[in-house]
Image (cartoon, rainbow, N blue to C red):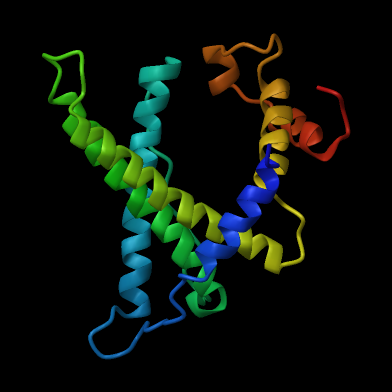
Length: 192
């Protein structure tokens, strides 16, 4: 049986061989830096609205307003993080494509079986998300950080253990978070 970590490392390496090295910001026919920033702010604003609704629908948290989008636009240098930005933007766009598939699937509500073409499309979009995810991990490794999916999963488990005292989801745990306790768990300062 093959080690999961070795498989992911092989996938990350192979995925990065298909990475575009082109970066055409502010070139003729391409968006300007200001247009890129505007689009990113719009996506962030829309995601914050969806996040507020998700918390209301799944966690019971009242929607009292949507988080203001105030990213540090001044000094934003996309070229300094162009590869990472590429992967994060890809995660956003592929997530939206995944959502579109789910919305198409919901139209099949009269049937208990989802059409095979939609399931294939779902898997295809998951594959695209995996490619961009591999890019983020490759970026972290280029920064000499030994961060693997297993490490992230382990850290996330510690955070969730700190958030949900009984190990089970609660609406209160999801909405009234003790970020200090979560940070302490992530840094190993407690056995939360």
